[in-house]
Amino acid sequence: MTAGESPAGAAAAPASQTLENEHAVQLRLVEAFRTAAAGGEGRDVAAGILRHLVDFTLMHFLSEQLLMRLGAYPAYESHLQAHERLMDEVRELERRFVAGDVPSSLAAATLLHDWLHEHVTGPDRALADFLARGGRD
Ligand SMILES: [Fe+2]
Ligand SMILES: [Fe+2]
Image 1: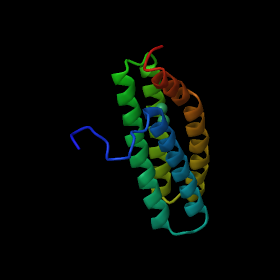
Image 2: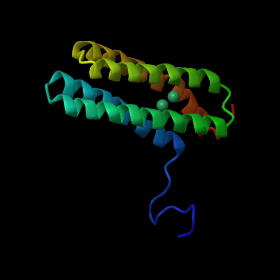
Image 3: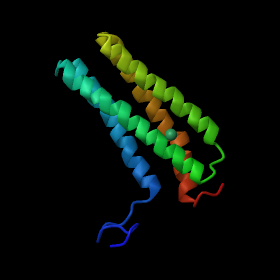
């Protein structure tokens, strides 16, 4: 196998499919946090899930932003601003939980879940369509 080739039998998934899979992980992490924080699974478990959510969301947003840059995506700036707002909300959720305000962090998690869903079905769907067309508008 030379550099850049996939392992035998493993076809590379299209970027839009990879993004869809990451969206499912993102939303599942928010739900897992809510379950852990509300169900008393222990502060460390919920805090660990939140850390994953922060890291994964940052990685996912950077990945989308790179795809937008590489494709000269026309709506890059507005999509970037939406990511920055969502990242602020993820960090605010973590701040509230670390401060010990569980009810407030659960409320923030519910709002974040809704906002992420809106983002995925709005700007991210538009980006996926753009990528599926080969990056042409
Ligand atoms: Fe996304
Ligand atoms: Fe996005």
